[in-house]
Length: 588
Image (cartoon, rainbow, N blue to C red; front, side, top):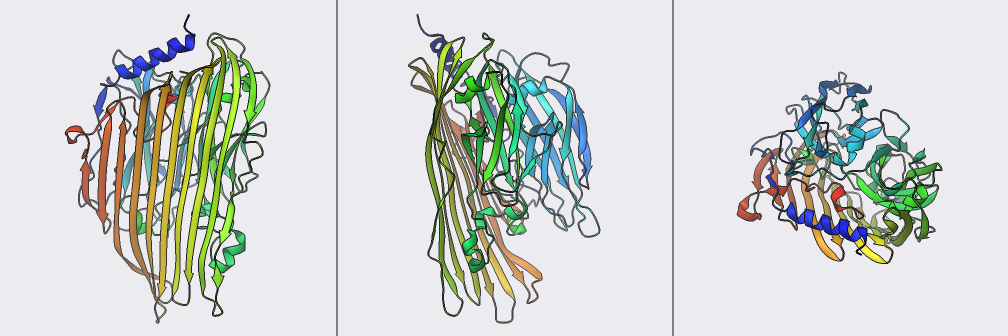
C-alpha cells in the first residue's frame, strides 16, 4: 500500500499541473509618460475568474493626527463558502505641500493586514498611489466579524501641511470549477498585545515582540510572518558603523548588521533577514519622485517555517513565541502573525525537536577595519561587517498520517563594506551591502521524503553619498542608490520539481542636492531613476515591466517585453510580487 502522503502529494502535483493554463492578464495601470504622480513597475495581485464579494473597511478617511482610525469588519454574506483568493486593495493620497513620509498600517483583530509607508508630496504635486496584498492565507481570521484600525500618524500644522487620505476594501473570490479553494491555515494568531492591532517598538537586541499562546493539541504545521521596519535612529541602519568608528567617520554607531531572531520558549527557532527599505524622505527625497524604492509603499513579510516545533506546540502547555532584532539601536517597529495548520483527523499530535544547531550560534558578525587618520585629520579606509551561518532544525510529529519528520536547513548571511574618504572638501561614504538567505524545508513520512521546498532570497543594496564643499562654503551632495529584491522558490514532491518561481525587482536612482554656505537647500539636479520588475514561473506565467524617470517625471514605460507575444500573463494563483505562498508549503 502506498503511504497516504504519497497519494496526497501526487494529487497536489497533478493539481498544480492542471492549473498551468489559468492565466490572467495583469491589470496594471500603465504609468503615463510625463506624469509626476507615483509610478512603479510592480505587478498587482492576480485574480481568479468570477466576481468577488467586496467588503469596504473605510472610505476617504483623513489622517491628520496620531489617533487611530477604527473600523468594524463583517464577513461578506454573499460569499459564505470556500474562497479561492482574498485580496486587500487600498488607495492613498496626500495633498500638495510639505510633509514627511509616514508609516501606514492596517489591522484586524490584532493581525496586520498591510504595512508600508506613504509617499512624500511636494509643493506642486499631490501624489496618489494604490497598494494590494494577498491575504488568502489569513482567511481563518476573515471568517469572523471583528474590530480593526488604520494607523497613519501624521502632523498637520502651519509648517507640515500635507493631509493624507485613504480608502481600503477586501475582495473575496469564491471557489469555483476554474478556481480551487485555497488550502489555507486553520488559525491565525497575532504576536502583539493590542487586541485590535499595533506594532511593537524594539529599541535594543534584548527587546521582544512576544506572546504566550496555548495552541490546539493537533498542530501539524506552523509558520510565522514577520515584519521588522527600521525607525528613528535605526532608519538608516545600513549606513551605521560600530561604535568604535562612529566618531572617526562622523556616522551613526551601533553597527550595520540587523537580523530578526525568532524563538520559542526562549530557544532559537529561526531567523528572518531585514530588508533595507528606504522611505521617500530618505537620503535625498528627490530620488524617490515619482518612483519610490523597492517595496517602500508596500512591505512584504518574511515567512519563517516553524513546523519542526509542531509536536512541542501541540502539548497543551503555554508557549512563548517571540521576535527580536539583533543590533536594534532605537528602534525597529515589529509585528508578526503565527499561521497554524491542524490535523483534522487527530485530537492530539505529539512530538519533539530532535536537532537544533541554531542554539549557541549567536548573531555576532565579524568586524574589520582599514580606517586610518592622517596627521592633518583626513580619514580614509573601509569598515567591513560579515556574518555567515548555517543551521538545521529538525523535529517530528505523530499525526493521523503517521510520524512526520520536518527539517529546516538554512544558510543566512550578511556582507557589508563601507568606504570613507573624508577631508576638508570631501565627505564620501560608499556602502555596499548584501543580505541573503537560502533555506530548505523537508517533510518525511518515516524515511520516505514526500516534499521539500527551496527558497533563496538576496537583498543587494548600495549607496554612494558624495558631499563636496566649495571654497565659498557652499556644497553639493550627490547620492546614487541601487536596491534589489531577488527571490527563487521551488517545490519538489517525491523528488520531482512541480513548481518554481523567480522574482527580480531592482531600483536605481540618483540626484544631487545643492546648499548655500549656511546649509540651506538651494536646489537639486540630475534626478533620474529606473525600475525593472520580472517574474516567471515553471507553469508559464510571465510578467515584465520597466520604467524610467527624469527630473521628477516618467520618461518611459515598457510592459511585457521579453514575455511570450510581448504580453504579461500570470496564473491567478501565482504570487508575482514574491509574497509568501501557501501553495508552496511542504506537507500539503
